[in-house]
Length: 260
Length: 199
Ligand SMILES: [Zn+2]
Ligand SMILES: [Zn+2]
Image 1 (cartoon, rainbow over the protein chains, first blue to last red):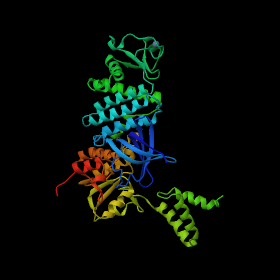
Image 2: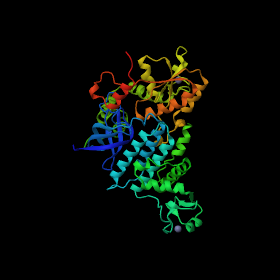
Image 3: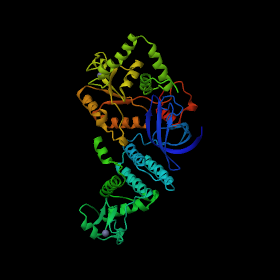
Image 4: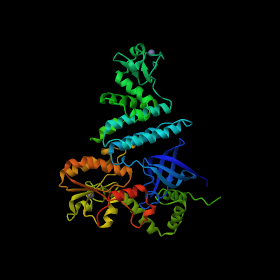
């Protein structure tokens, strides 16, 4: 039987039968792989903790009739601080959910998504303990870059309804910038007036959104964002993802459920 | 073409759904049953139905029981100030078999999972809280699986139970007995080192 090697990040695991485990992961080549690890749930399994959630692993996989079978796995990187901080766990789960529940087009852009998942898990892992704001900031980063990779990024320079080019909003002097989740971006004043449902952003909200698109993680890490803007943009992006990809992240509702 | 008898094939298909039973074993069991006396067959089928009818969840710990309250929760000789939290009802039997524990249990019936939208109310955490608040409990032992999901649920439980001023412990984790160090992964060894103890 043919076999292959893969480097992948584990996004979800399921119990299978008495002691097996199905592992769903995203590979460095940009594929979602589902494979079975036989006996992986036995306490003395040769896999031990290697096939745990969020690990980056290198595996030997044999092609099976239905599901492929993992015959060997080594850990390349394990994010040790995720399981010990419930908030970190939640945000990593949301990243997994977005990747697994959204149709990600294959091709050249997919290895970028692998890199993005890795970078964000790493940022989350290194964030301070229980710092929800830091985690929300990383989530915004993930979600916007994700939208860009799958080609659904919101328009920030042209009106998303009539495509009119807008004045430089980054140095905008007024205090109202209109944004439509449905049309997928900012609006000119005319279009904004004709739409009953729209979001109103201030310059600091807009700049944060703009930076999310344009900054690399090293530079993004350094920017300061006020709590108000962060909450607002975070919610805006969640709504945007729900509307355009139908992936219901609803992390707000989940956090509320926890009562902590 | 292979011999095909509908009722036999039906039974084989049912057996194939059982854990650990593949098509070959399913066929073997079916042919074995065919040879059994009618009485034995009746006993077997009746006990399956009876089990399903009689077994329910204990109203206190949510372990399996034929009564409203299970024999563990009714046992006055047990240490009622200790509650051991497990994921599945089957885990109770596993800990009972060790004979090392004389306290009570609480079966969650799952683990927290944001990705599946499973929150505290879906896994009997509110029941645990009200149980702990109503009774005089001095220690809670969290015995969830040493996986990322088990670990995260443990961290959450600790967070909501700690304000109640109860001692919270968890099962020690480390190297499996009988294993070889060289085959253990770095997470397991790392945990064993960070949770080492004096001898
Ligand atoms: Zn317009
Ligand atoms: Zn009970």
